[in-house]
Image (cartoon, rainbow, N blue to C red; front, side, top):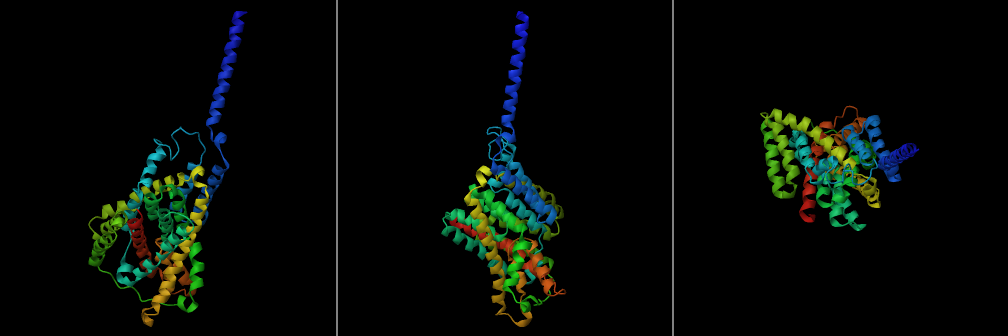
Length: 394
């Protein structure tokens, strides 16, 4: 009888222990900790991936970011050291490169190593288009200040208008770390949507006659000019805006590796494996930083709206500047206003949009090479604008 009771008690304790363990296990699952916000963000991540695969909108960016959004919004119990904001977690260590601004300069190194500045060197006045397109940054900065953001937050938001994801991350890591997720997602979203957003603005601001303007073929640029260009540019820009040194320095260093002709291995590494690895890391960690508890706020919505305004202003400013500049140019030297949109630094997507819109007006008018001039100038311009903002806000 006693043995029977002991056996029953042992079985009951085992069952209770099993049930308690099961309850504890279930309490740790994502199903038990899921909130509506997590599901919304997971859907947004899935949309990013769908746009990248179905529409082929910046797949190298949107797929890592989209998957990162899903990864960052898997619900979990605090203290497990798995979240991007939990000290000691793997994602937290990887996020360090975003938080401290390490990844953007490495991406600029790769961009420099794969960029040909010949179109800009052959026609230096195109740099003015890249400069004019940065107007969107400062327009958004003023609007953000007017609606209540602090100067540092407004500066970080405004940089979205440059259509330069790495620069946006670099600036937000310095000026507004708490807004980095929203700013980065906004910047990369508008970079991916360049073919959707820019054409209507370009058509609205140009006449059919202006869209038919043919530009002179760019002259051949010598090897010496290509080598001297990054050296002269870093001296000029860094002395002018020392705060932009991390981005500008790596951009022109990468370009020197490419154009010197004697560091091909280094240039290939910077423009290939290195930039690919950093793109993966920055995409997955920026996406993971959009946890619903920190991301789904009114400020995030306002950042998206202000980012759109900034990007629209930048595109309109570039096109409008070309129209104004043409008033002072002789008929044979006029610039097609359709390349004004490429003053934003979404390389080479905005230049490709210029070319496509030009082909729609005249199938024999090839604008791609001309548009690459202001496009690469926009990369330089956004980095300089970032340096200017840092110089008086940081």
